[in-house]
Image (cartoon, one colour):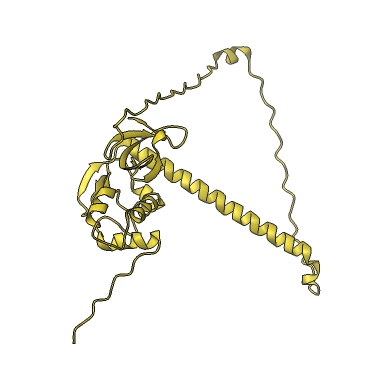
Length: 241
């Protein structure tokens, strides 16, 4: 009697793709605990190592990398002086100050958005409950109303008189000049310069960020930011590094 090998199941979403990467490359990817910064250009390594795997497409790999590198635990791991690793866990380039600052900024922005979303959800739930109570005021009939607990009024502190500032002290106060914002001049890429591996500047927000070109598909370009995050953008938003 011959034993049958259980066929692999094709992942259906990004979460399952990340789980597959953690299973096949445990020294590089993880599902819990502290993450490790990934090598710049690791997408090409993954595409080469998994080219014979019919279960995972390049699109799924790209999406999984984008989700993995934008997670809070990954961004928190991108710190100055830490080594990036390849698929086998071998140390590579060291993260510099600019890359670490970009990761910290992305982490703070992501947490702020999550907080705003949570507040909006709570406000919507309170409004829904209030509307339901107004639409059905007799729902709690038969129960005695509960009087609110007595709160002792808090005495307001007496405002202290403000001492006038003499003319001599006013003249001694120095007004700090406002820092002058330096606007970086962007240079359009030369024809033929947009190739895989090229160093470019990508403008996703107010200021351009350094990135490495991973893949070029007509006008769409996939780049990897200094933090390791993979982003798909248009060739018109890329400039000379």
